Image (cartoon, rainbow, N blue to C red; front, side):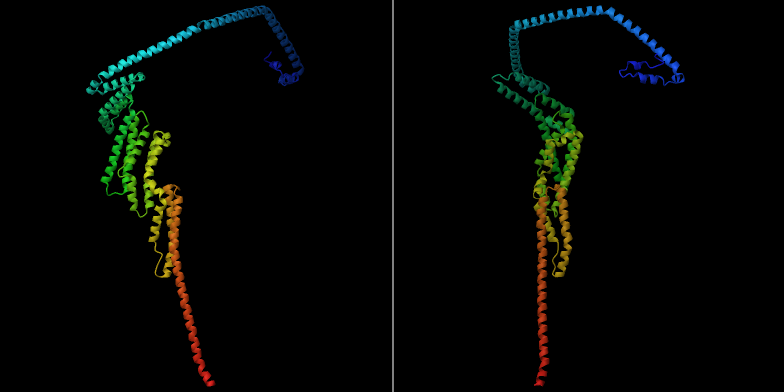
Length: 485
């Protein structure tokens, strides 16, 4: 029945009988014979109503039969809930009673536990005191044996004991003794440390890292490594100066930067494998900063000497800074490959400042440096000649040359300082143009003088010519007067 017509629409809250009847009569069967179809639909609806009534009656009978059981179950649950509530109240009263009765007992137990812990600490301190005595009694024999492993274990044991014996009366004396023993071990290992660092032995270096970590002297080990690398780089600088004595400072600088860069790449990889901390970038940056400040002769001294020999010191300074800039860029690329966040770290910033430090004095004195160069170029520029016409022509030809020099100075200043020295450049250009103006003004004075001379000569010539004409007229007029007379 439900398959031939849509009966699910009767359960909808928005059921519309007209809409349902109209949709039911849209079928081809209804269109063929509406009266017969209407009778069939009415018959089917009557059957459906009968089925629904039967289902409702059956459901009502089942509910009526099960209702006493449901009421009985609800009553049982109410009784159980009341019983459970009574039990919970009783448990709560028991808990309150236990807390009240046992509060004093718990306080006593806590005091006993505190006493127990103190006794254990005292026992441990006595053991460590005895251990300290045992370990320090034959420490000299252990040192004489030369067994580094046994010495390290002995010092680590004494170190652990000393941590427990902080409150003993002779703590300072014991601490000083332990530091003395650590210094002895460090002095014993120093030749082997230098050998391991020089030969770049990873396994050997790791062994010493473990030893110095155990005795809490890892910073001292890093100082040994720092000193070893610093010595090697300073020796490389001296070799460059000695072997390339005829080369220029710029060539020395290039060669030294090559050494620094190769050492950087090699040692950052090596330090990463050997030292757990700090990062290899920080270690090498600190070493190079120390090396740059310890060079003999210093980069500042060499640059000063080289600048005095240059005809164009600002251009030479630009070449030096460009060379340094290429080295800094290589270091930056290397650091970015290791850990990009390290580029802005204080260690790297300090390194960059140290690399440009030897140029700082010349940049701060850029005005005088550029002024000296521009005035020397102006002095070499010939704009004076014995003939005033030639001087004027030379002055006209010098104008584009002057502005070309100014433009070249501006470009050089931009590349050197990225605009930071513009104020100093303006001062230098002002003095440069003033000097040029004075030279041009001297030519103008010369030109005025020549013009005055020419005007004076022309006036005298005109006056003589006028006098000559008057005399000639007089001579021509006298015979006529005489004849008239």
